[in-house]
Image (cartoon, rainbow, N blue to C red; front, side):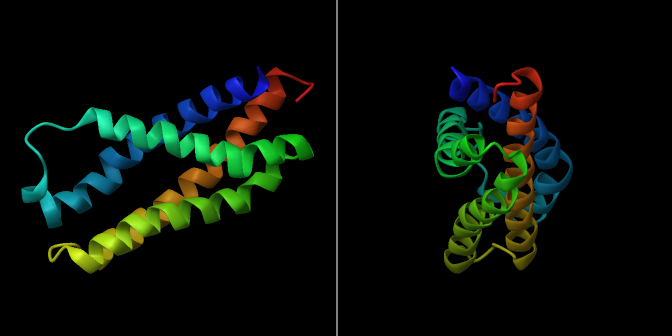
Length: 135
């Protein structure tokens, strides 16, 4: 039950912050460089699969071990690294293979992924601990 709650909390934190970051930071940069590559309608299914799988991976590799250790702070650095690797994989691959991709996209989105993932992992654990003192 604790892990399900952690998953829901972490997902809510991640998605709410990412929605703001995408709207005000990521999308304007991507619009400048690759707007013509966007599909006519956003493909929600693949996005949902990414987010749900990403948070599951984050919990499995980072948050659950930190939960067992009893230390939300111990999740921060591993989660930042997880985010940098995941977002960096996407960004560097696109930069290597898509002519219009820019260094600005690579840097901003990779750093965003690291910061967002690190904060979300910590916040999910801290919230779980605050609402469930046994955590």
